[in-house]
Length: 192
Image 1 (cartoon, rainbow, N blue to C red):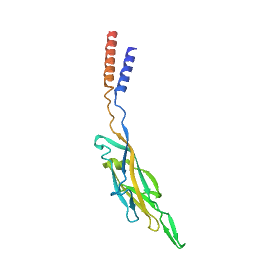
Image 2: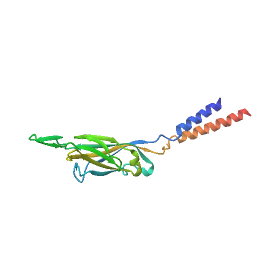
Image 3: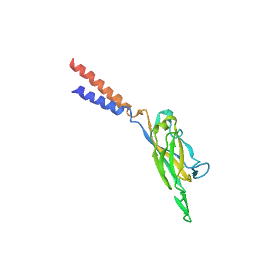
Image 4: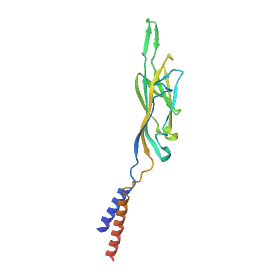
């Protein structure tokens, strides 16, 4: 009976004093100034390429990795989507947007107006080198699409790969181990 109680105490002590769960925290990287301007123009022959650098926000060398990430694009200054001059000329101002991250295939966002559009990002791209290269392109059938990007925000969750060992439960582990060894010694003396 005493052996069972001691084994239970040792098991509880090791669970309580063992490694803590991995730490998860939010992160955010915002680009909202474009060469001194609040918004940047994107045209049919003028795609926008930029980089979200997370090395200041996340210490990849210490074992932190990105576990989920979302890229949010906020468009502004949208013009009319289509106009007719004197009922004769059709002008197409719709802007269809596509995004490529780290040189991968284009992801179609569709026709955008003023507002925010989000897409989930493959975290392997970020964890490879701590950054995400983004290219935003606009198009329409008449090649007249234009858009203004107000900001680009990359946000998500970062986690520490290796569990953090808690320093506070360590005395509990030693106490439980001592109780378990003491109980085993007592049990062996009784059997003699």
